[in-house]
Amino acid sequence: MNKPRVLVLKKLPQEVEQYISDHCEIIQASSETHSLEQLKQLLSDVDGLLQSGLTIDEELLKHASRLKIVSNVSVGYNNFDTDAMKKYGVIGTHTPDVLDDTVADLVLALMLAAARRTAELDSMVKQGKWDQLKGDEELFGTDVHHATLGIIGMGRIGEAVAKRAKFGFDMNILYANRNRKPEAEEKYGAQYRTQEQLLRESDFVVVMAPLTAYTHQLIGKEQFQMMKPTAIFINASRGQLVDEKALIKALKEGLIQAAALDVFEQEPVDPNNPLLAMSNVVTLPHIGSATAKTRFDMAMMAAHNVVAGVTGDSPRNIVPELKPISL
Ligand code: DGY
Image 1 (cartoon, rainbow, N blue to C red):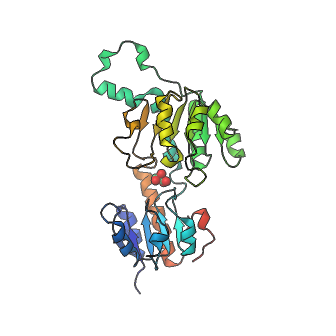
Image 2: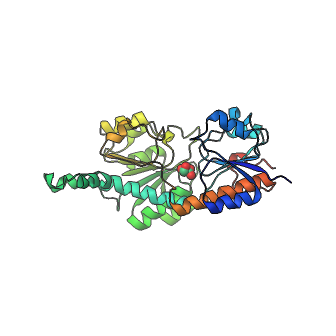
Image 3: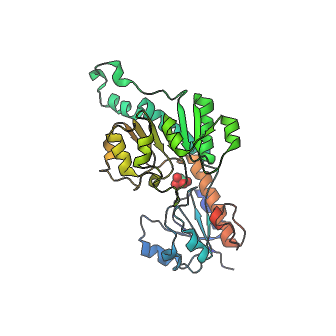
């Protein structure tokens, strides 16, 4: 019997590739080297797709009559048009849990980098400008320990951030979320606030929510106006949660002190984006989950999902909106 065919749009670790090819025929391509038209062509003749980032909508699905499953190598699945996937009976999976601690580590790194100005001062030292300082004050930063941290979106990653902030830095934790999280309140002393209260009270504001129609541009002009002028804003979830123009204006006008961003509205970020020229903004190239071990675990989880989906088993990590679909 012919093996099911899986289109893989990512470079996978050898062991992961081996696992898939034990069960399926792999067709390897990539969104960088193949046009959308070429990808549609390839999709017309496969049972599964393993990838991250490609928009899975009606336009794509109507070319994919054999397709049973799209397995994202990411926890975020804002690239899924879940209504269209339901209509075409295509399952969508993602990679939750395995990256929580890794992303939370990066959030702390962003907080520390912005507060203690580590990227800015690293570049000052490397440019040989240390001896040009006029006084110690030029090196002063902001304390992270004992400050108030506001987390917008208290999911698994939000909780992992709260844990580090509470036990590592004695921070006072506030959170805003659709539902109260009694366990997080008990474990980390996290206090529930409305979003507005949180923005007004926090020294550090971290957005850690998935991108949905509700969270799109959740943070804009009005929200920056509510923040303290000393506030440090951190985004490691999705760039579209923030109105980037409003962020740039808020930083220019001193509505907030600094920002640290792992994600942008457009990725890779436009080299002319004004945020890149601001010394009080830390910028990273969307590396929240990017450690060798975590990326391996994510790839293996995505591989298990796609193999299950094309061989008639139920994948473990179907996204909530598509859970009722059965093979
Ligand atoms: C995720 O898994 O969603 C990370 O942001 C990488 O895209």
